[in-house]
Length: 172
Image 1 (cartoon, helix red, strand yellow):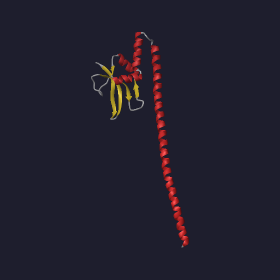
Image 2 (tube, helix red, strand yellow):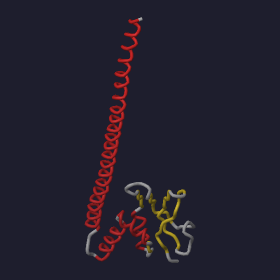
Image 3 (cartoon, one colour):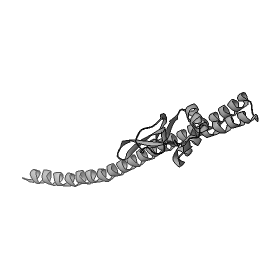
Image 4 (cartoon, one colour):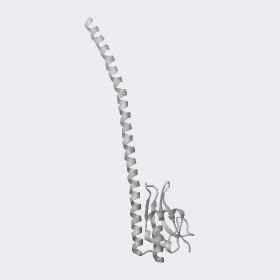
């Protein structure tokens, strides 16, 4: 039975949400699966990927073939690296502790990159909000400035008319 690690689509139209599953290659896309390994939400920025790394590594060691997208997600979360390091331990090139140390160092570096991207996005979003507020204030000030002279001119025009009426009343 050939096993594939692939995505199973969930969510509503226009808002996809995927499960990462190990399934028989002959089963339907959204059909039966052997094990759910994680979830992938492309709707967030950066995309949210939750993965059982140890379960994915076990399936990879048993011969499961990931699809292209699933392979990208496994690489993103470090499952392919952990599988590679496990192969090195099996061959005697590394000890278990060295492999675990390398994997943890990679995880820390990756989480720092993801956090930097999230911080950068929040900074850009805050700057865009501040720019929008400044533009809105400028438009508001311009609108007030345009309306203010009209009111002053109207008052100035009414004043001579009132003086003329007063002088007419005095003459009578």
